[in-house]
Length: 236
Image (cartoon, rainbow, N blue to C red; front, side, top):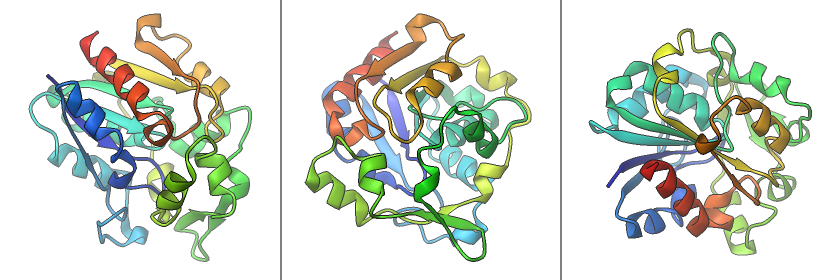
């Protein structure tokens, strides 16, 4: 079956995939997650992180035929890695994630959305190089349909997010766009508006788009269903 590398989004780490991995393993896949630089257990200084650091870390952890799953901001990270090593990527799966467009940064993509539900919760560092999410607002934005235990688990692990990776565009998406890809929309998402997820994928073949009736963190709220969608995407 597939080799799956799970890539987290802003302020998160490999820990967010803990409940999903056993469900993917039960379906016969090899699933693993990594901490991007400055996230989780990685000690890289957040002020030093770039999108290239993310791409390099992902590329270094890919096998010869790896499926990349990117959540939220992780959509840019997996595309950046695939731009480096397209021959090693079997498929890209975007989970309520930003889909890069040629010459457009993630920050610019975010501004194209009709609403900005995350913005009121962003707390910028004094130096402007990173931000955190207000812990009082994070449960409703990220985890409104998750258990209290999962919310507490996540809140204790959220970390600062570097700004620099969100201000870099991908210059040439031609190789990436030739790869098989799938998008899993989360239709009760309070971080990336569901209608913007539809907009980003409106010209994709119907077979390449799946939907879940959940919030921004299905790896907590419904990992079994999420595993089923990933498995079906891989099986085609």
